[in-house]
Length: 179
Ligand code: S3P
Image 1 (cartoon, helix red, strand yellow):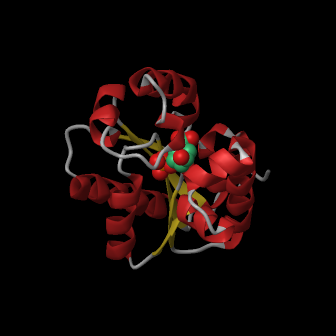
Image 2 (cartoon, rainbow, N blue to C red; image 1 turned 90 degrees about the horizontal axis):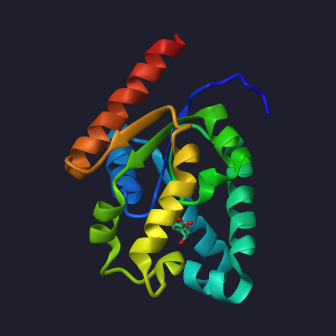
C-alpha cells in the first residue's frame, strides 16, 4: 500500500453506537459530499439484512464484503464514508481508507454505547446473553485499531451536530495542511 495520502474524503470509524451514521449525514449534507454507508451498501448488494448475512453466511462472509467495498473506494472523491464498527480491525481496510480519506474515529465509553444501543436489535454481535460484557470485550480488542485514526473525537458530552462540526473543522485543517 502506498504511503502517499491525498485526502479527498472523510471516513468515520468507531464502535457501534458512537453516531457514525447520524454524524455522517450532517457532515455530508453540510459539505455537499456524497454519503456512503458500508453497511447499507452490503445490505443492498446481498439483498438481505446484516443480521441475516451473519446468520446465513457467517461473519467471515460479511468481513469479506466489507473489504471488497473498501478496495472499491480508492478513486472516490467528496464522499463521507460511514463504516461498520469492525471494519478497521482489518489493517488493509484502515490503510485503504487512509490513502484517500481523513479517518476520524468517534469514541464513547462502553456504558454510553450500551445506553445508546440497548433498545436496538439490528446488531448481530450484541444479540448475546450479556451484551455489556461483549461491548467491553470488543471495545478493548478494537481500541488499538481505532486509535490509528487521524482524529479521535469523544462523542459522550457532545450533541451530534457538534461532533459533525468538529469533523468538518478537522477536515478543513487537513485540507489546508495539504496545500
Ligand atoms: C459491526 C457493526 C455494525 C455492522 C455489523 C458488525 C461490528 O455496524 O457492521 O453489525 O463488528 O462492530 P455499526 O457500527 O454501524 O453498528
